[in-house]
Length: 127
Image: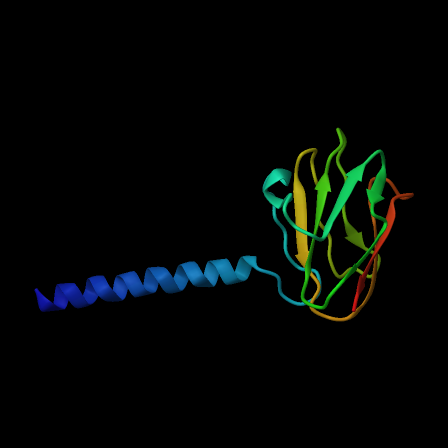
């Protein structure tokens, strides 16, 4: 019986450890890595939000602190992307009502665009 309790405890520890590993894999690593397919409303309270509507990013330029996250929210009826000009991050397709969040861990200037609409351009300044 004592061995069974030990196995159950070890199993619970392994489950918690594997859950933490999965969660850490989902968080941002490096500059601008992190995808979130959750609904846009989930990100509404965030201070660093860029809205996508009418074939434009608003604001076009956002200034944040090192380590902050930026969330792009699609408030339109068409899909958009958030694609780094240098290849550091790429949201993939952001459908209407969806959002994409990424963290910026290094200071710098990060230019991005929409792959579907080449005239859509924006910049993240990390201080």
